[in-house]
Image (cartoon, rainbow, N blue to C red; front, side):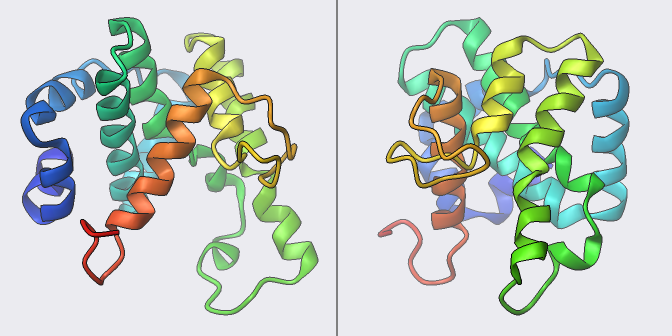
Length: 181
């Protein structure tokens, strides 16, 4: 999927540039154990667009970690956190994920728990570092405290990489001149 994204998404390939080989290499060592591994398999089968999004976020998270000069361990954790950042969505009503209109407050609350669910799944698996689980929980937080689920400003370094990767992925997926954005 990562190689397909590199071929299909010119903006992503351009962003990763000379680091693309190192990014792809980091993705080869991902752990997919227990429940999270099963859920990623289900995502691949049932929601291929979500898998592509997750792989893209993982690639950008790895690239950011590399550019920041992070250790190999943090780079590996960035890959895993990026890949599994939306794993909690597997427990949501699929209709909510494809709503073409604005969500009501009950629907929005349901969406807001997916980072908590994903984090809990990673902790329960017992094979992922705590910083990966925490980053997954923080991937919709914002440094000004306006994010969710906790509206906190206390975001871990890996959480900051992950939330930044998701924002960059959204910018790159825009139809109109993504590299300029």
